[in-house]
Image (cartoon, rainbow, N blue to C red):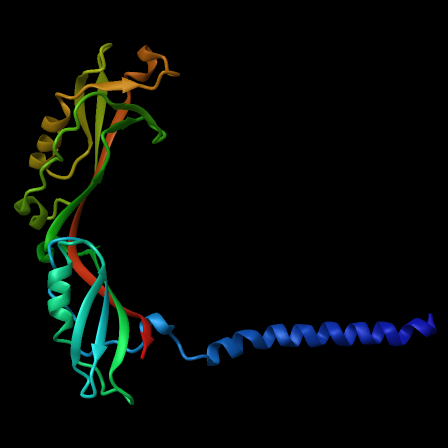
Length: 240
């Protein structure tokens, strides 16, 4: 046993050393300045007017010795968002760079976030023209032309009609809507608007289901969101 004792002690020492290194790793990670390249070197007062749409625009900009944006070129993005984003980028101001001119690749992302109904700027909806069972599985798909989206009047949104609406639906043997009842209401007017849109539709049940059993106890789900526009500006790349 004695000849192996030095080896055992060495093994214990190595294990303790590795454990100490692992324990120090989080501390070392904390000493690294927060953020990455994509979140550094942003322009001052960089908020842009929110255009009517969502998406991301990627720009190549040139910053002169005074920190002004002297040139802007759009690299990618939805066409309806590019003009307003380019115009806004021309107004950006940076700290004067050490050596100028400096070329930067900047991304501007336009998104939306839920906000209080009274102060919301727009209404959004999330839904699909399918019927689901009590477990949430899709059991019937729309048969025919896709109808227009349900309305979401501004007055309903500002009054607080937002969230998840659930309608209970049953079908006749041909797949037409036979009955609709409100299982989870948002407002009487909004409930009626969605039911009116749903009532003329025809659906086709999944072929593996029993038509008599599956035509009852179906549900249509739709989410109404009161949102405000938001945007994120990030510097993806910087080069001379």
